[in-house]
Image (cartoon, rainbow, N blue to C red; front, side, top):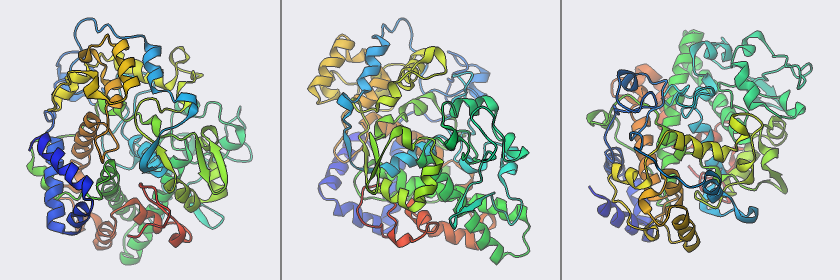
Length: 535
């Protein structure tokens, strides 16, 4: 099916939203529509294996097999690209007078989840940006770690559970450091196991300039970035609680199981719960059509795109959704700046998980696009190459990789090349600026600029090419996970009680409601809401 057919369908559903709601309630129709939509996205470009990676500008055995090198969809651009000044291009993302452009109805909780979710597999190597440290899978390494030795250090080694602590009657991850003895200049880890969780150079990077009172109370997490924002901490804590809750259910049903069997089964269930949330709740939020994606189990294995996953550079760069970060995060009557909700575990413990999730669910995130990124991302970093800002490093990374043009990527993803900047965006000021930067040649427009400049179709929260590329990578990533394979996705893998938990989980709100105090008062939604979500 081609773009024209889906554009007609999208416009129809956007005008008559009850169509999407009705279709979602009829299981066979919901799955049929989901399967068609997934395949439309997954066949948008050539399936893996890709002939290119960051290992080499041409095809080599290493570029085809060594997944420590990040993949790429298209080969390097040839010749001199004659790109505009880096600083002027970076400035296209800046908010004007610190005024954010809000999304239509996408919540801050969505942006929290997006950062937390993608950080688990979009992992650029600190020391060689051609490479990655990813497992290339949805594996909940945020709480389990990237390697089994890290997982072992985070395990309680009793009843299948992960290590935890109780604060004010609620479960949280354990502290990474000895709170009483640690200072900014002298880190004293809470245990020898925690000292070996992450390389010291990585922690030096992520804890740079963190105030001492916050540093002391950093949590022990599966990834080095696990404390980077309160949103990240919220998600880690909820998932930790759900893992340990499932362990209790499994032990109650299978009293003869040892710690290892309980842990491994609970982890299997948890990873599939995350995939459920990603497909049915998170990816569905890219539109405002009120339709829940629910692909038929096993449908992916019948398709040519069912191949081993390999994270691409383009997927990494298009997910730099810094424009979603608000100028202020409102919790009750209090307003917090970005610096105050970064690396701030004490703030999480002060309010509690439920209150923070409700606050994040009832405030709009920023609109994804140009002219809408928080000033923090333009400040020079106190480390790294030439003290560049986050945004400068991002654009520079694409340029160093010699990414091809925006139109080349549209063509590669089965979309027509644009003929003018007027076709790209209806924003007259942006048209003028892009014409000046790229000498009125739409074919010279950089891919990174184009995907953020492109107008959003009615009912969508992303530009058309970004929707296509996110859909391709998301579906071919999630649905090739071994735990959703026909011969693995069964009671032997999850247990009967584990399967029941999976069947009862369709949204992040389902997991949240099971793991917070006063759950009837907690709002957990990727769509801004003023009332508790009903499941």
